Structure formats: structure tokens, C-alpha cells
Length: 229
Ligand code: SF4
Image 1: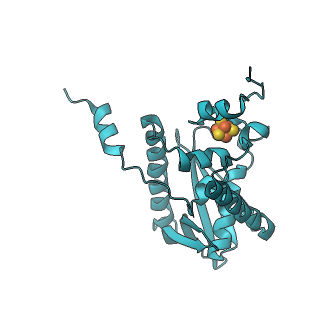
Image 2: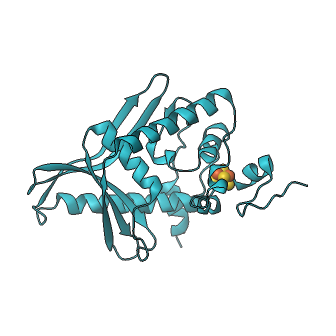
Image 3: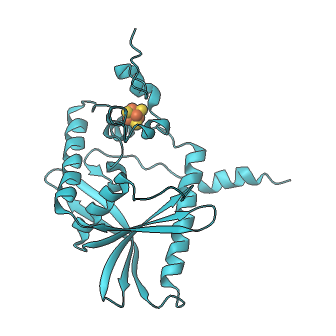
């Protein structure tokens, strides 16, 4: 018999793109800066389960594109999908892709749509902070000042949409994070364990593939308990 699980793994396996210091990605900047630092300095092969999750995200996004460009939904026009952009800063580059740009015909207004697939939509009452940061940067980079975060439940394709107002101060804060990350990477200095130190971000540690390396450095667990002997 064929081993379909294995065929899926063969299909979704991809050449890992080596991250280069000086080129940064908006989708990562809202996460823990120490983890991003590890991604550059100690790259690991992405686990198969994580690749599958990424792939489901791509499938959901393709579906959203089909919905947005369908003639059955004449109120919007899909202007572009996966549009790349680069922001050239003084000594580094921010490189990203805007999920979708649509035209809301009734208002003749362009809107950025950032799509996030999610495991459970119930209980989601606001867009997630790291996604808001990503969208603020996209609005800054594209000069389109209207944006939404569209969450789609992977189980049943239910969705929730959150309008995000452009906030220049927030966009500049995101840019500042890139500068901080760049300095840490250039200087070979590891950042603080940002997620561990912030009660709103500590959930990130549960999904972090650098937990062991991180705990070894400062001996602090995700619960804030000191492990140092
Ligand atoms: S374990 Fe937590 S604090 Fe440490 S790198 Fe990962 S996300 Fe950041």
C-alpha cells in the first residue's frame, strides 16, 4: 500500500531558506526577539508538524483569495495577493509580503487584508498583538492606511475580522524593534528572554523550539521559576 502520510511529508518538505543578518521579516517581529535571534544564529530544521501547520495556513489563504476574487462577491475586487515589498533601512532590509489588497467598491477604498488561520475562533475577541504589529508595518510600507486582520477557523471556515486603524507611533515602534534586533545580531549579543518576562507573551514559550537553549542561558523557566543551581 502507499504510505500517504509519508507522501505528504515529501510534498511539504522544503529547502530551508537560510536567514541572513540584515534581512528581516515582518511576520517574525511581533514574536519574542530572543527566539528570532536564535532563528538567525542557531537555525534548526523546521519540524514536520510545524511544516504541516504552515501548509494549512497556505491552503486557507488560497481559499480566501478564491473568495475575494469570486464574481459571486462583487462588492470587493482583489487587487493583489502575496505582493512582495522591501523597506530599505540604513543598514538592513525589511522584506515582506502583503497577503491581500482589495478594493472595497462602495467606498472606493483600498484595504490591506492579513489572513491568519486559527484553531479555535471562539473566545477571540480582538486581533492578536503580534498580528497588529505586522499589519501596522504593512500599512506603513504600502501607504495604504486601512487594514483588517481576518481570522479563519481551520475546522469550519468560520471567520472573524478586525479593523485595525493605522497608528504611525505603533508603526515606528515596530521599526524600532527591527533596529534593536539588528543591533543584537550584529553585535552577537543575545536579547532578554522577552516572552518569559511578559505575562502577555509567555504563551509563546510553549511553542518555542529554543526553550532548552533559552533556559540554559538564564536558568529561567517559562513560569518564571529560577532553575539556576
Ligand atoms: S523560550 Fe520563550 S523567552 Fe525563550 S526564546 Fe523561546 S519564546 Fe523567547
